[in-house]
Image 1: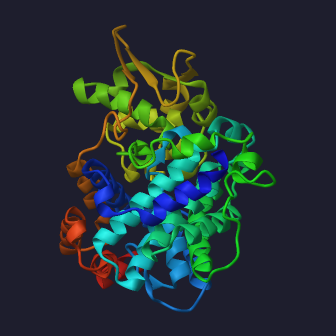
Image 2: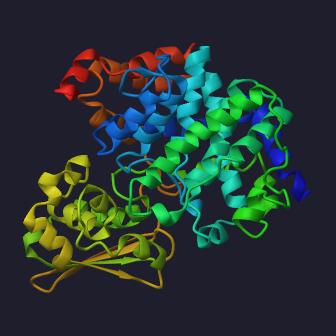
Image 3: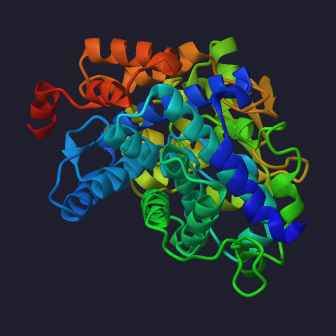
Length: 459
């Protein structure tokens, strides 16, 4: 029954066991967690991280929870700041069918509670699987195109449910309490595309993490809340944010087909929707020796949706614009033939040569034959020869996944200066054997910044 969608999903999240999760899904959850840690340590380079850190510090004076790559804050403060760190430099996961970043809302509250209560790595893995699947299942059930047409932004709307599910699973909720946690999470669902083009879209995500945590902790106190939030006729998520949604999709093949497997990763910083363009362009520059000074024109084709978001920033302003500009990203890949956070520092994006390349050498157009994150690239050389490539599945997608080694490499790259080499090695080892980790506290100890690194950052 459609009206039972909340209850069925709550039962699933509350009763999920390690042996219920296929091995490939467990490994994907571990990949997601390791990638999340890579994004979080990179997030210390975010322009607004210090501002969010000040907010997180102001939430409470206690210091019981680890900030990834930092020190300790309160349970709420660490959850909020970790959520922001993961998304701060635009490099975290994406559930493409709902344009929702999932890990910033699910992982921080799960880590905070697992650390507080000394839960095992296996417990954490199960909680993450429950949170990831809850978020994505509600996402596909809400009828995202309708929700998007109304201006809603997925992470802040859907994320609180996943955070609540992960925390509820760690706290041992029964199905009734989990359903109430979903009701409390849904009562905090918020965030619209009016914030697009500003860092507020990233705040939606860390606030979603905190909302999920609060929902679960309040449900733990037996706070009275609706147990049918998704499909309630008056004010339910699916009726308020869409036109009734597709509640049957939420529960279809639940536990057999894992929607969480559709959560994609990003090998490179820059907007999630331009990863197809990045893939197509890297396929060319890695195969051919291209001298950017001999390129007459770089033509990029994007779907209309992606073009509307990222194809109109030929003359970007500063870092945030550069991160979401297809023109700048294409230009810097062509000229540097690498794409790391170093390419999004003023020394690169303010280079007059690069600004001119983005505005004049790169041509970005919508292509009606492309959908979603599909992209095409054509490089026209000065001698008239042409090279072309097309990406249907960006690197990091379900169809074109990253290897564990690639994700480890991403973690190592951005952990430099934040964690010591021994911390990095031990953390990777702990992640690879997460099921055998006796207490998540050991992992969190490894992820706190070394005193020397903190001093270097302060200087």
